[in-house]
Image (tube, rainbow, N blue to C red; front, top):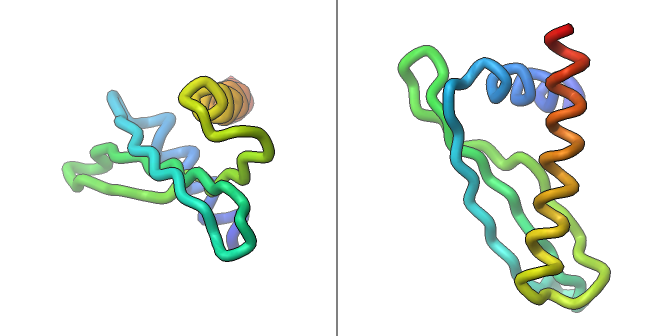
Length: 86
């Protein structure tokens, strides 16, 4: 089921003309840094906001570390878009 939801989100993002991201970094009860990546986009005239990924940051949580994690996620997403729309 989670795979189907993930595939639907990837398809919706690929079809969106534009999307924005929202990041929220916090530390959980095990002292692990977590980065939540949310996306906002319009799909069939409805504004949607979805959790794209929850990333565990194993290094420091500097701005550079956070942006590197986000960059990796969107590189992966770009590869998925190429597969979906070949």
